[in-house]
Image (cartoon, rainbow, N blue to C red):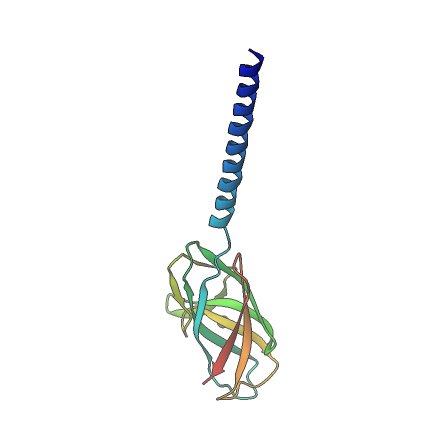
Amino acid sequence: MKKLYAVLVVTIIVLAASVVSCLFFYSETEIDAEQPSLSIVVQNAWARQLPPVAKNGAAYLTLYNNGLTDERLVSMSSSISEMAMLHQNLVDEGMNSMIHVDELLIKAGQTVTFKPGAYHIMLMGLNETLHQGQSFVVTLNFEHAPSIKVIVNII
Ligand SMILES: [Cu+2]
């Protein structure tokens, strides 16, 4: 009887251990599934050349979410200007205006193209003149994905 009891205890321990390891493995897999998307792809970043008197500029680019999870662009910065922020152009009753957008959702598999008259990176208070043929760097910060330094070509 004692022997049977011992076998039972060992069986329970083995079972418990396998359940725990399963749970551990499962939770590891869960964490993997929630790993930040490392697959935001930035293409075709450009800005228009501007005369030296220009106080503000704009940068355009294409964002592609190549990951399996949605991602959000939450902020941006550049040494070319005092401030860099996401703007969207809106046409309301024929009036063209720009609004500040806090964050931009880029769904898994989605491409968002920034262009004149649509989303753009507003460069407020330019520190340098935007000369054709030169470039500058804008850093994009995301909710999960690591920040991306983008080279913006001035055309
Ligand atoms: Cu703007």
